[in-house]
Image (tube, rainbow, N blue to C red; front, top):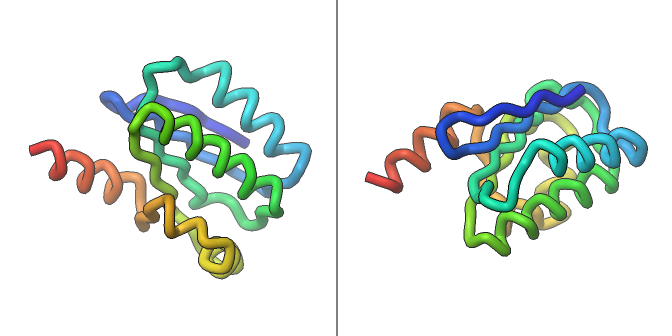
Length: 114
């Protein structure tokens, strides 16, 4: 359902399965338990997510607010199908950048630091 890992200073969250009210609460708790107040770069990988309801969008917005307070960066990767349309309509892409893959996001952030 959720795998969390660090790559250098980036916290990568890989989600799997459907994200609804019940699972978004579990995801929020796991992210909270595995991060610290110094995390300011986060990638949420949705490559293995087929369905997400509004609580999933709320969960992502909550992570955005946390990272934004720290003047950090957050990215979404692996968005496909109906979620692409939902994220466009919700305006999520106006505040959170999307990439095709985790490696694409990491590469852009590395290039910005050089």
